[in-house]
Image (cartoon, rainbow, N blue to C red; front, side, top):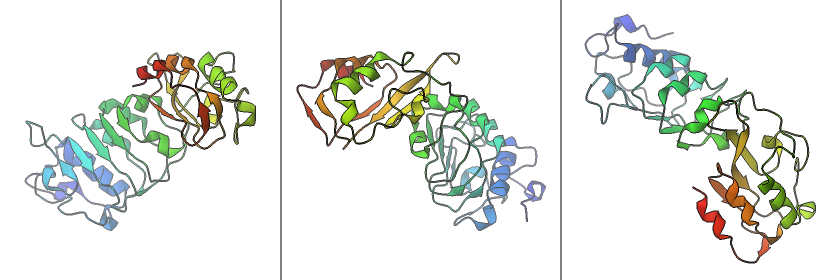
Length: 248
């Protein structure tokens, strides 16, 4: 059974794009089986629907936050969600969502996008990598259309890291110094450059408890897109390079 928007009156007008988009989400994700669907599809303003907020908006019909974590959403995220241009927060963590993440979400220019704990397939639209607060690395999915980069095309900082920490003796060095895409190099997460035609850049390095020895190379500070570095629980020596202070 689907929720029929024209039955709604008052706050949820048939011609209201916000209501229509939210109902599309409700129908696409099994809304009748959500743990909490209070007021969804009712005549009340959409800001009173569970998980929906118009906080910080001057227009009561402009939804700014959609927060439905761990609420038993199933099915796929409808692309119509990308039409809610006032959204600043989308939190759909810990549900049972499947299918691909719609590229239309990239139209929203979201500061916050949280989608972990679902069963998405396919790849992540590169445009979403620009979201400042996201949990995309936890999805363990590649970015769409990622190019294959050979070691010669990779920033030499990665080669310096491998060589200076005795990479041949790491517990896991899968993909390193091979022609595999860098997303397949163990411990690396990559995203697109600001230039959509440019190479994919390393944004996360996680090599904790991987038998790294020696010193951290200062060249790591040259990885301009690096935002997270975890080399804990290894046998590294020497000083922490001051160049790492440039990591955002």
